Image 1 (cartoon, rainbow, N blue to C red):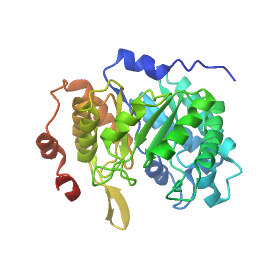
Image 2 (tube, rainbow, N blue to C red; image 1 turned 90 degrees about the horizontal axis):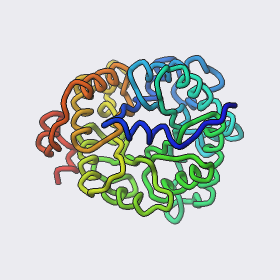
Image 3 (cartoon, helix red, strand yellow; image 1 turned 180 degrees about the vertical axis):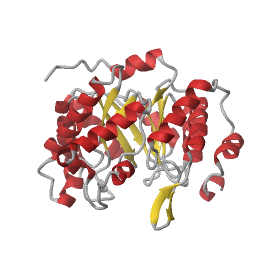
Length: 325
């Protein structure tokens, strides 16, 4: 396989652009393609490679500068739920290899980000999973992603510093740069109680800090912009990531749907940019139509001043009740 330099396409793009568009949903898009609930999406990297290539291609055609591999649940802890914990390297390699092929055919620079999500287990001392075991799981995954040709590791949806750090150290061990996001819930904290300001200062103290950091998923676009404002208020220079879900899922005609329209996600994208985010994308429920609207708005609407919380609420709706306490 052709050797690639990891000095680094993301850094190069950030140095020449005010903002970058990251991709949207993976799981909800694969469900539309026929993935059955309860089936690990990573199995499709070998069982349905053409559909995974289409997922990636849709992101590129929507204008994304960055897309994530189909490997969010690619640790042995997650894959054991479908008796595939002995296929970690294979499935992550396949996710990355397909992505590399699609990106290399794009005709423009596109970042292939190797997605690594949480193990689904809680680390000691609260839970049973040791730090060393978590590190080993992430290292196995990162090695598969690297072998397939990713440009960097994209750690996402984390709740604890311990797991965030274990994944980061695994990326560093493979020689790959990394970025990392946490998911902040309705009280403005992760499930384990971490705030955006705490994350901002945590990454600055790391021996091998990320190229960028921020938030993904969470409980809504308004809360995402609020998290970005909190990151930016720390006065640090590291690029900030915002990847909000297209609202919370609602049951409509017996199916779960995400109700934020492309126009609303375009509003979110511009507010996130004005709040201080440099890398802006979507998470659950974010379709290519949302991404196209976001890109168009970012390209055509001039940057504005940092929004107030009142302006965020006026544009995107109120924060969840806990945020108003």
